[in-house]
Image (cartoon, rainbow, N blue to C red; front, side):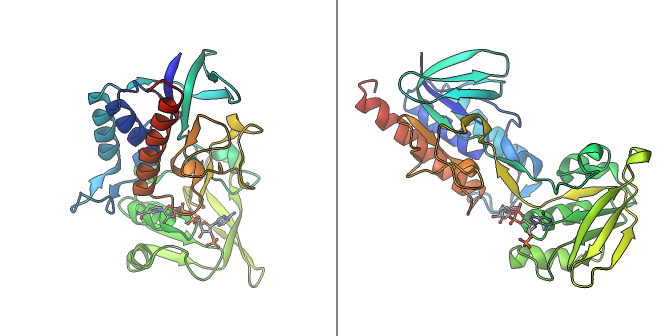
Length: 308
Ligand code: NAP
């Protein structure tokens, strides 16, 4: 039986792994669907303390991982599919069918990009519809593309895409961005970014050609419909927590975020850290901070059970 299993390798999971490994808990870390988490899909991270010049997101995560490995954390490339979180031992079942037993569990499975839910959207994912500019932006050199959303992610994606695209339409359903001032200003002052306010995407064209050729837009104030020629749609409308394997066993809010108190869930020995339990801050540094808290909580729990 394991002492501690950590699910996820974003900023929360890896920080938990560093602290738990240094405390000699010998944690087993399950990588999850996106090793390194959401920061591996951003470019420069400018607000993580200690890096005044900024640091590449993937580089930051590689460093956290190396730090956890240095103290003996073990990593396994799997995804959790099921969990049994009442009584002892706790157990998790992985995508290869393996079931692992553990005394404590830290859930740091993060959140995944949301899609709009348009009729043709899912069919064209990977064929022009995407949620990751750093992954797919370079495919769209000197052609028009669109970003949907009004938050920091949309601003960041739009700015990044100006490196490649001829023009980046930034489509937002209101006439004011939700993004922080600095990010919004940077986007609006970029001559390649053309904001389109008060507008929603009604559908993606063209499924019959099996690639994105344009968008059907609707002005929400006037109801006017129009077509916009683009080669790609970058969806940046927020994220949803990855909590499906824990439904029915852990307390969640109406959006599926785990409810925690100082990282403790309602199940004894089960802790949660990072975006999976954080609908309001969702920053790398807050994820890392809560990962640290979860590791300390797991350590205290094990000690109280006589396994310290
Ligand atoms: P977000 O702040 O929740 O913004 C989502 C945006 O998408 C909003 O503008 C929202 O419109 C729009 N939206 C939501 N559902 C929609 C739909 N169905 N159709 C059309 N538009 C829709 O999400 P985020 O931008 O991913 O940011 C998440 C968190 O990460 C934030 O805390 C942000 O500060 C942080 N972040 C930070 C950085 C950075 O500091 N470098 C970079 C990226 C993200 P409304 O405004 O009308 O609700």
